Length: 436
Image 1: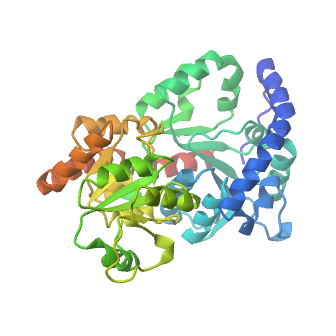
Image 2 (image 1 turned 135 degrees about the horizontal axis):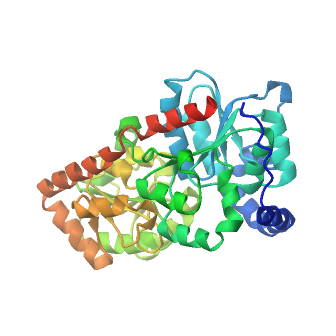
């Protein structure tokens, strides 16, 4: 274990931590009712959510002690963590703990059945909860997935000499400008990180401009986009059985990880084409809301959770109201549309559709996936549209031109190959931190 860092923090950071510790319980109290409702909507009551408050059901003697802990807050980060762990397990036999932040992420991690993996909830970032968590597990290292740096957790790890690393991190130009304004206040937080694995060289330059030691910055590439570590999407017999009675020889257009309002916008564009619309909402608990909205505009809807439709069923939209199945549903599509890129900001991950060799259409908002989105657009590896009319035209063009679809797929595959080996480089970074 790395010796404890006894360096005194700057006064600005000590003041910031004092304010954080005073305000955090108040903010938790305000957010708690909405959080509990969300837990109930996502079947969180069936999971040990008391672990968020460092309340554990197992005797401490049987807890996984001294292991590496990966922290992944959301479903997206959990998917990255699981992808990383598949490669890690091939090289390291030691058990690993995955600490997640949501009920959906917990269920997804448990269902993954990764060998020698213990799944727990990450503690809320309050002093008492973090201290109990560290006392109970005494992790040998904490690896944060992407840029989820929690002040109390980082502070307590530093006091105990527990190395903290960050994998698959990125820092946008917008975030850099925001951090620059408070550089003297927040940089002590990042100074507590032993290694940061970054997706792009530009990310390293941005972190360095904030005063972070370049020796701590490793440009590893994106685990999310690493084709070498990914299991390609595959068609499942279970999904084919659902599609067969309702497809009627129509092309399948899949919308991945849609957000509120997008389902109607996309459906209105797709009804101009003779296609089967497969809609995968980002949050499965929205099934009722999405189903009702589509039915109100005259569309015939079937839910994936309702099983196999009767033979000859007339269905316009299949709603995939499940978690963790998107990748393999993509393998059944003819064209993929990326959600959160039309009526929201940021976009969702296009990599799975690209790995499935599908032509990809995105809306105007893919900010969370820069520079990948711009690189794909530059080589015509994806199509970007601004509205429903343009979407309908783009779909018609692709459906009429299979050769163009193949060319787009080939070009987008080459862009992803730039990230080949990212997972292995991230593993080597963690190994070097453990050997310090």
